[in-house]
Image (cartoon, rainbow, N blue to C red):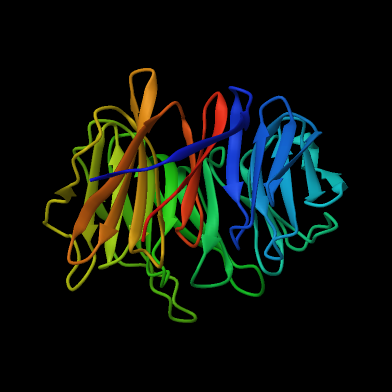
Length: 333
């Protein structure tokens, strides 16, 4: 197995809230809980300050990103010049998550998901969930958004269409949609993964019966879709791949992917799902493992480093990790 070369870029606050690459992989942005904002582009670093940060989302144009935080404000940042605009969430609710879609911006504000234009104006009535929104992602099937909370997951269209709901009595923590949008994997507090099998036909509201995969050694907070129709899941120190090819994983056991000795903190995929990178805690440091897909998932590179946050470039050429410092590494083909 190859050992990756890691380059230290700069010191960072310990309380980093989010670390994200731009869609084209040319810039890296971060925000910390105290409102510090930074961006790395072309080898140069710029830093600004805003309210207490909780989330970050890049614009599709790669030139701007937004941050949201506990002060109830959404701020737009231009990579070249700094802040260009801001607006207050309804009721000054915490902005815990945000997604910048092609036509509008979705923000998670307490129990509500609100769709905004780039000027902050509301473009649709808020969607209310039974509990505080714990995850918010893009919906690849309908150019909209998917949100999860305690007791319910919802698919919210960015334009015309009805909100679709998946109800389950339990605490939903994380979500990831398959590339075709047919499946939404939901990581749960009770150490299980629920699979919302969606009927995408127009005018059809009823959905297929959900699947449930249990037995994880901890709550499931990391989900990603990879090559071979595989769903990658992490709960506690267990990383597994589940095949959704053919008849799917019903009645089958996931394939364990060994290598991590502690709680898995991040699982991300790139190169159209043929590359996976996982980050797992190991005492005072962590281990990053790179996995490639041929006929199955195989580990091909790893490195030990002091980090708790990971951001994989969309092109799969490298990743950023953050702990006390910002670290960069290239990934071999």
